Amino acid sequence: MLTAQSENFGFLIQTKNEGTTAPNKNMSDYKTSNISDKLFQEIKEALSGLDYGSVEIYVTGGEVTQITRRQIKKTNGINTRKNN
Image 1 (tube, rainbow, N blue to C red):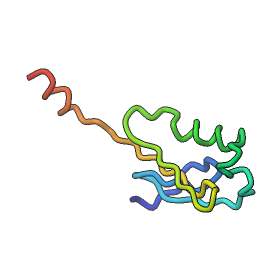
Image 2: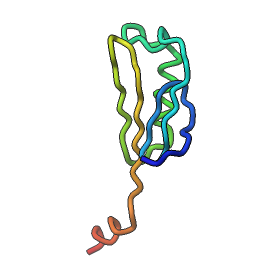
Image 3: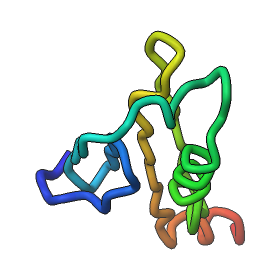
Image 4: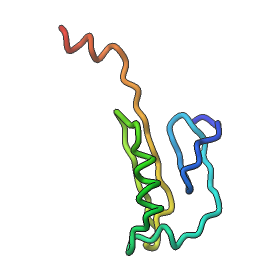
């Protein structure tokens, strides 16, 4: 991973090409027993604009503690193989 600042989605976010931020937030917003609007919105933001990749949600003690967004950039080589 590179060590650039990542965009702040409200909790720990790691991406392949970005660093990590860990803002101090109220963890009651991240309980898995009752999905808050805030948590739902932050998951939607992590998925937004993701054409290829994954979003991993880490849970510790019934609370979402981390979301990792991996964005994959496809190369032109994949189109060349399809046409052959």
